[in-house]
Length: 133
Image 1 (spheres, rainbow, N blue to C red):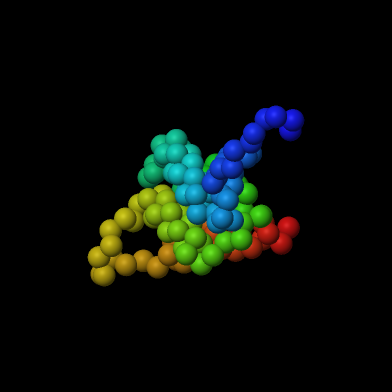
Image 2 (tube, rainbow, N blue to C red):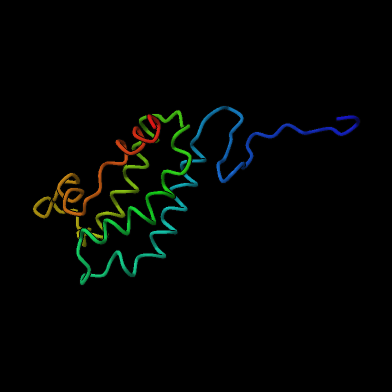
């Protein structure tokens, strides 16, 4: 553009997504997980209340937290390690909602069991659905 020099950058933010020069999406996923935790903390009064049913907590989670985690997932060329990072973050949130955060062998409850009780499908399936849509 005439005499204006545009400098090359390694990453920039565009529409709440972080575009990296090397084509990776690690920073974008980290950012979405961080924003998801912020939304979860804002709604934790409802999500951690023992008087509220698990199904209702799951519905609140679907409306508030999950859309922020999956923002931009339609275009992500996601790797297994990145998907695992999303899975871990989501399961930590769901275990807090369920009220089961201990990790002893005798108290072990499988992630799938907790997901079914709360009514949350695995994030892997949701990412695949978003990409297919």
